[in-house]
Length: 194
Image (cartoon, rainbow, N blue to C red):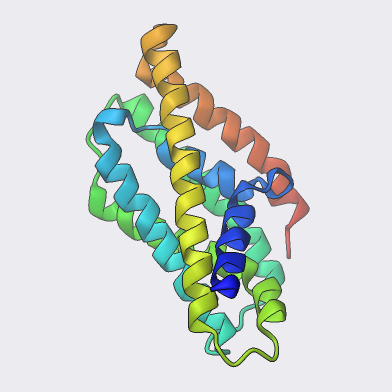
């Protein structure tokens, strides 16, 4: 059980580490268009992301998948940029109606990429370990808990801006998404593998 707790903490730290803020940026970009009224929908998306993240991590730990780490490090900020860009597109169109199947599929694909980004470190931790499933489940639990915390923080921030300060939802989505895109551009440039 101590090992399980260690991996839960590792999952929590993986998401909540401010120095590795790419995960928080992605979650923020994912949650920005949502309100507390749609909490079930964003929770489903976060869980899809967690499952995909841990699936690709598991595939890497069991040496089923092995991709170029430089390419993965480049694709992570691309996923953030694309998610925020999608928000901008939807906000500019004034459409609150998003295709949930497309959103779910993109979230799953982006989760696979993010999981591969952490796979080398996780594989190093697992070197020589016979039991790999329990650590993966602990890590997944830690990721899910921390992601829900981040999502709740984003929803609370949106609520304060939209209900308290009276910023229109469209303006909030545009402003925050464009800010995330601006933060992500240097990350894309810094990881350019070509």
